[in-house]
Length: 141
Image 1 (tube, rainbow, N blue to C red):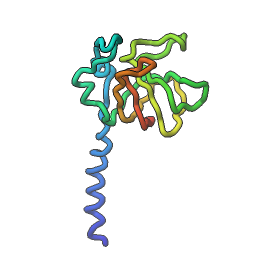
Image 2: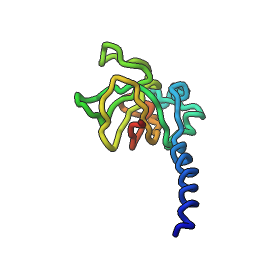
Image 3: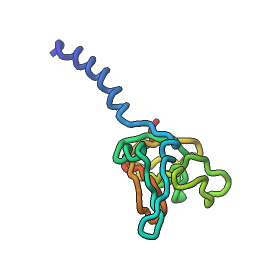
């Protein structure tokens, strides 16, 4: 039994960092690579190749929480590239600077920037005009 202990520890030390790096850190500049295209008498987002490659992938992104409910913890909120200044009803940028976030567990509200990880969904016909959603999201510490 002892002869397997050292190889197991070595394998864990080298394999755990690989699983932690499986989530790609994405910048807002990458998500800004989207244009509007007219289709069926409406405008829809046309995502460029770097964004299309992220579809369905586990990513991390850093931003500012815009709560959708008045609660100390949030499970459904908007993550923004820019901080919300004085007006919670004024959007701080266009749809390419916002990500809808849905978490499995509540996250504490914060005015400070937070890093969120989750599976990126590209939204081409969202009724609220959103381009991006992070599903199964969680806060990264």
